[in-house]
Image (cartoon, rainbow, N blue to C red; front, side, top):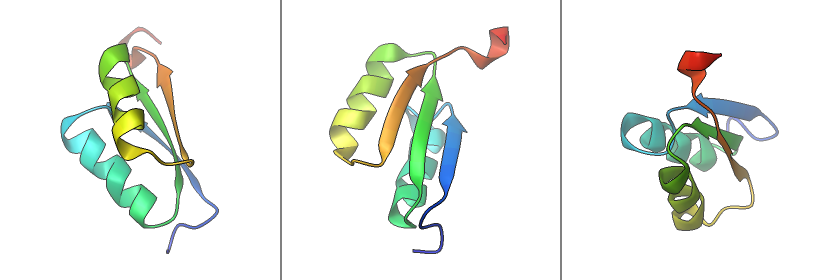
Length: 64
């Protein structure tokens, strides 16, 4: 629980390496915001993780 009380924003966190990073941060105690353009994947990730400390925001960081 090295990251307890911390908040991480992980872009591309809905699948692949980003999703693996999300799970690791959750395991370490952080709250996580998944920022991804794939709405369906982000919503599925939140559902699969079933954690109170995870939030999905639909965003395309390439257009920011």
